[in-house]
Length: 109
Image 1: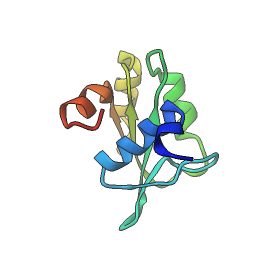
Image 2: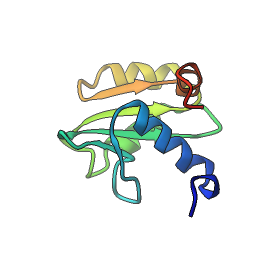
Image 3: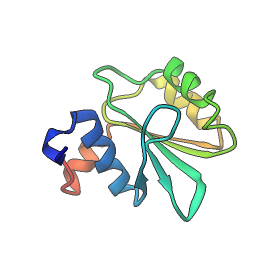
Image 4: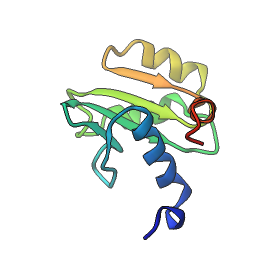
């Protein structure tokens, strides 16, 4: 399957992994990106057509493969205020919202 044939969400995962200088792995039960120099540093990409909310954050941070890791969540669109506030309280979570704009600015979108 060529890059052009990939679903849009997978293309976005690959772009974010490249932006973060990480390896794209993805798949069920795995993070989307991982830092091969620091396996405890992982990235998840969310391509929702709606705002990423606090329920999404809680669901994600409770997954077994996230526990004990430093998680960066790249949300392509917006995040709710409550999700941002909740992420700020968790020292192992970095929440990046509206990442599509950043990808456009650096020429990856």
